[in-house]
Amino acid sequence: MPDTPAAAPADRRRPQEAPLVVSLNSSGIYLGIGLGTVIGGLSLSSGLGLTYALGAVLAVVALAWLVVTARAADVRTTEEGR
Image (cartoon, rainbow, N blue to C red; front, side):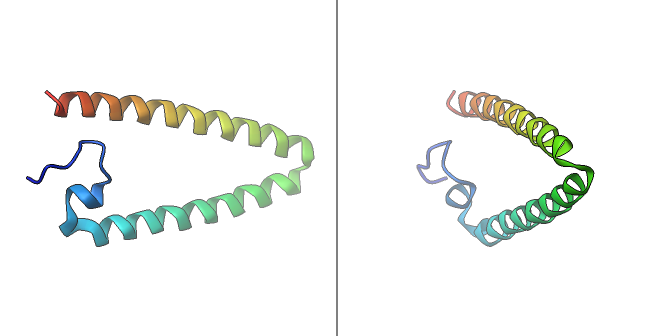
């Protein structure tokens, strides 16, 4: 295996899978845009109070997701570095 840091992007660690990584990334972006449109439309039809509350809940969920995935990445990086 080439000398690639453990924190390198997946397309650099496995160059043969770069097209798959790019397509999955694009699919995730499109899914997020679609879900955001649906959730935003539903919350706006319910009133501004619900829109702000839903925005706060989604922000907390996103922050929790970042914390969990960052910790998982730290554990994987530590295990690969041994």
